[in-house]
Length: 183
Image 1 (cartoon, rainbow, N blue to C red):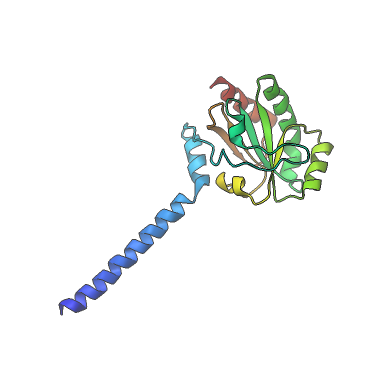
Image 2: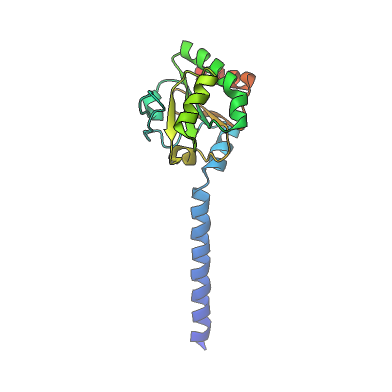
């Protein structure tokens, strides 16, 4: 009789352990909620995968977020085919002018885009900040980016100050840059 009870009990405990481990693993793979929730709560999470070096677009050199340590960076994930990216291009161009006066920069990261189309987009919208090619979307995945455009304002210490999951306006970007510069 004991064997009849112990067998199913062990199976139930094993199944519950597997479910708990799976839930823990899924929770650990969800940086979107983690980053967004932390920023909303007033915390400044460290930008993920800052040491990941990505190939530069066109004549831009390969870069990583870590190479900008000590500078405010507006990281923008974009693609030439993205309608919202067209809508925010002038705001990013203005942000680059503001940041350049303070030693910072906008850093574009292309998302599933053809490099020649990306370069044409930059020329058409007169965007002169550095850009990298996130061809295998490793950086985008680290930031839980899956819809474009998405923008992250990163302070001089490599911490995320603000996140926009969608088209960002000039006024909002200016407010966030001011906040990052003040820290």
